[in-house]
Image (cartoon, rainbow, N blue to C red; front, side, top):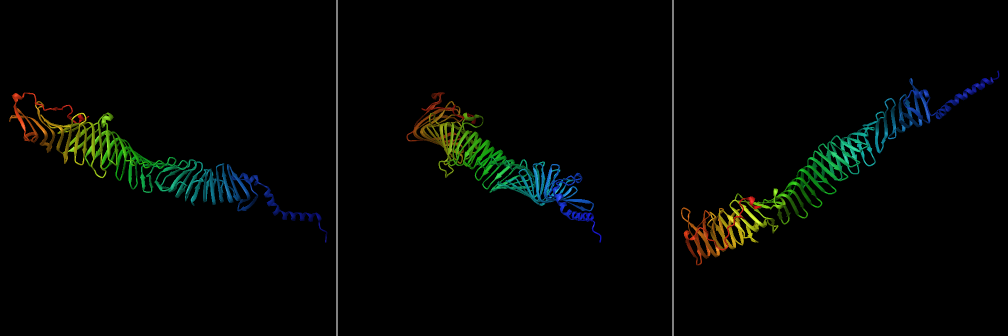
Length: 616
């Protein structure tokens, strides 16, 4: 046998050794190589920057790359990280702690992903998290268009900013525009509220939610419903502009537009606004309610009513904390049996005190009494009322006016001050006091005195003297005395009592005067006409007799302790004298043209009102 060819054997052994080492050395060489061959990189959009291991596989006519360990790839400003990547031209399958980082703002984390470098679209799977600034989006499957920076999901997701979180079945996240659109069972949970809807939009930069579908917002014990509007989460400000409604315990409200300011704790309802609860109801063009101050403001055609009151005005303010309400601008309060109108009203329910200013009209429907004034102070528990100044153009310098209907005719009374109250709150009896320069006008009756009182209990007027004797005029008759009492029955004049220095004077021509004088006199009326008169105490009479042609023929002068006169058609028909009457008849030739005057005679024309205007 020939000896072995040493060079050839060495060559053979060397080749076998190399062949055996190649499978071991090849991965080591690849491990030390951080990038694929340059020629291969030039044909790919997704550039490989690092990998612990690179392997090549042939699949048909394509060569696949498998990158393992600390994989990092780049496409323009986008970085892709993963544990393992399989590259097929411009498409990559990513696995194990996948991170896609786009610039400094957007990062997407997933368990696995498919990345298309040609379309720049990535589908991510597993525990997917998209982070953009303070916002984090959690889902199980996400498609992210890196070119347009649009993320979409259809398997449910949760968006959170640390304080609030939002859940929905579908979503479209426009990263560049900071807009997210949510669809399907959308729910927002926040420490201050929860929100449910089918569709909504959210700006991640401004933190503004826009409502584009029926939405229900629940906040502690209140709920708000709307079909359009927005909510600024950062500033806790909301505006609802499509069929907005709210509920809080037994409270309900609606308007064309509704706003809520969490910083000021204020609700605002605008446009045909309505709010109500089990005890009260409010309507206005604008309703504002502050939960902090507990103040409600109704503005524009304002209307408020509760179990007892009905209020209308340009603006109504009510504070439920101190029980105070104001009516600003011309307003009307119906608080049966009283109704009050004024340019401004201020009332405190807790104290039961109120003030009405400016062209005030107060009506007591139970007593059928109306008082017109510039200012009225009133107290509800005692039904106290004090009126000053005049209504309308008269202003503060004018005089209050009272009016009431008597037998289909209105009686008017004016004084410097009018006061009304109920002496006993258990009854409807009201007492009216008029003070200083009191004047009364009715078409068939007028009066003047220094002060007056009237009680609805017996319908009696009392006329008092301070400086001037009280006087009542009826047709051609004048009644005077230190004190006068006038009684009404069934809203008709029933009788007049004259007390101390009583005198009744009658004249048709104001040239000659019939006179009846006594200590006290009582005149009885029927159908608004005097029918009988009783004169008591040192009675005296001067009466001018007429013939059939109503020409004067003489004067009768009579004195007695008491007399009774009977009238017809406002004229004396007969007289009865009591207790040794003494009298005489004087013919007109001897009587003269001048009237005979009893002591204390006066015929008052200046103080007699001829119209309502003369009361002021």
